[in-house]
Image 1 (tube, protein in one colour):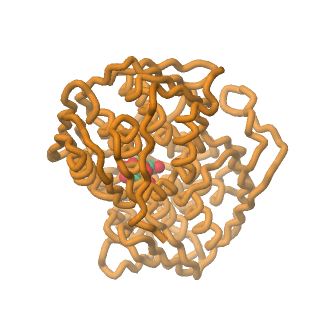
Image 2 (cartoon, protein in one colour):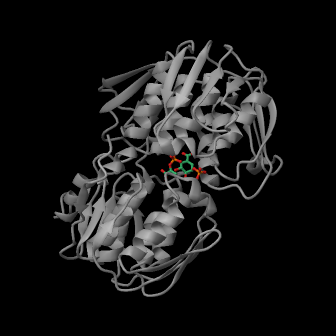
Length: 452
Ligand SMILES: O=C(O)C1=C[C@@H](OP(=O)(O)O)[C@@H](O)[C@H](O)C1
Ligand SMILES: C=C(OP(=O)(O)O)C(=O)O
């Protein structure tokens, strides 16, 4: 139950933060890992998975269709990419045991884009009806790309003509598959959803995006890389194929032993803390190669005044005491926008954040929410057709409303580090992807894990 009346007095930093913050696993990698493991022809492991509302909903949804997902405490030492020993890889893990997918079943998607988009194609492979519903906001988030595509590929979907949740996928035990055209300009997750299950369709899948610019392309690359790592054959625009066309060949998927990377988008508020307090924060286990959009923070926060160093300790961001405005197209990394907007509101010059019109259809209308909440503290933010213009002003305390959006809550916390009296409404909404946020934030401020 969400308690909107609770406000969290965002702690004010007493000086420059100096901390090492271990960030939990990536939402996007965990939820792709779960889907691919559930569709594999043999059991697999997910090590250091994120346990948050979005990933627990994904696990529950798959379990509802018959997939076995067991909590384990194993002593195995799985290697991480690059062959480096993984210090905590032998810790808690999920063992995923694929099974015949069954209906009738019910799936609660909450407000998780990954669950509401990735699971209907899985349900099309089940042998009975699978009903999907979720939070009120989930009914407003776009799903037409997945629904129309599934119908074109041979599935029966009953959505009452809404093109959105709630809906029932009447799984027939298998799906013909083949070529399909979709407009994925409102969410890259439409493409990822069809590709993730595509190897299990009888004819595989060919997805052609027709429409406006496609957002969040690194997340599609993540889908492709994880599919290939599971043994799928995937053709992409980047591997010499046609622009905007992705093809997955029908075939079995391998069970993997996957170590989930830290969530680099959830590292953002902690890195921002170093930037806005002129301090230093290290995020251990920052991957040398990754498709996560959060990796772009190295460049973005450097341009905004920080100094980044990636070495064997992880990524260290050191604030220089200056914060600069930025003019940047965030279309590839839209989920970073709230955190960048918070830093931009504290900068020494104007910022223009562009290419993120689709954020109006995220957890909340993020462009409207950021404008209203930063302005509510005395800021000067205006919405444009596809983003925000942020003119820094001296800010004052007040309630920062969060609209059940985890990234609004963490953006409010960043502002509260340097603006006295910021109170973040419903900070518990961070549980969508980062349940321990308030504790991690306090520990950062106490310098826990800081170098001696
Ligand atoms: O596939 C994914 O894991 C995601 C894709 C992006 O969605 P959109 O393309 O809808 O922005 C991103 O914003 C979301 O947080 C996670
Ligand atoms: C847009 C986001 O989430 P979702 O997966 O629900 O789309 C996000 O985490 O910023």
